[in-house]
Amino acid sequence: MLCWRGYADFARALESYQAAGLFELFGEAMVFFQDADAEAAALAARFGLDWRGSAENLGILGGFKAMASAMESELLLLLENDLPLVEDREETARQIELATRLLLSGQAQVVRLRSVREPGQKFDTRAKYARYHGEGMLPLLRRSLRPGKAKRLAGSAVYVHEQADRHHRGLIDRSDEGTYLVSAAALPWTNQSIMLRRDFFLERILAHAEAHPSRRRVNGHPDIEKEWNGPVWRRSGWKIGVPSGLFTHERTDRA
Image 1 (cartoon, rainbow, N blue to C red):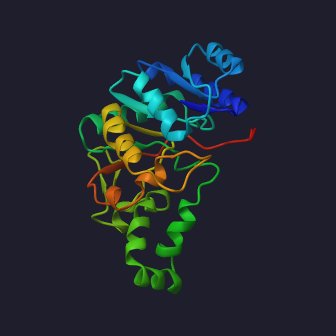
Image 2 (cartoon, rainbow, N blue to C red):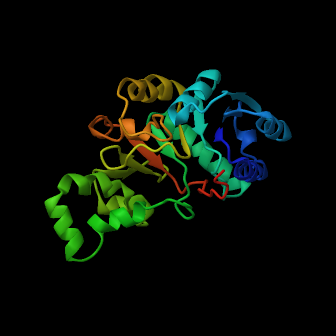
């Protein structure tokens, strides 16, 4: 879990994790605090969590790298401080176990766990999809004029259609258990609420992001998404697992 300020939101998220038994499903649970202070240490102690920290904000890439480097687990669930859990204990365990099987079997390189039913704030995926794949002449015209853009948005069908694989065959498949497996050609990298192998994250995702920094920054720092959402990602051949999801996005503390 990566946290930069926003302690009130983080406390609410941690309470939801405890209620759903999330920590019980993992061998390690660690928080990395940016701009760590006494309040951060007290919050970690309140929930019995191991923590690391930096005296300054390292950014999303730097913070996740420091956290992942300090951990030992083969698989990582990456969370930020404003991502409460919206499912019960049984469903949480089911989806974490499912994501584990998808990753260890190699069926998926990344599993998205943002809730399809309750994605929360700053989720414009459905609107972007509708511009190119909705009904009517305008989406049809956009698909005709910008087929590459339409393909890049096709994977977002998993957040719109109940049988998304029937709408975009070849880009969206299903695992043996029925979970969507989406081509990286049709669904971008995201930092939010994902599971993946620790070695893949450190040696492929972060190494590439550091070697190819984007000019666009978040609070002056690389954020991984801008470094990865380009041709290299789309041509990787990787698959993204998309089950129904566990986490929403809810930020109320902007301090």
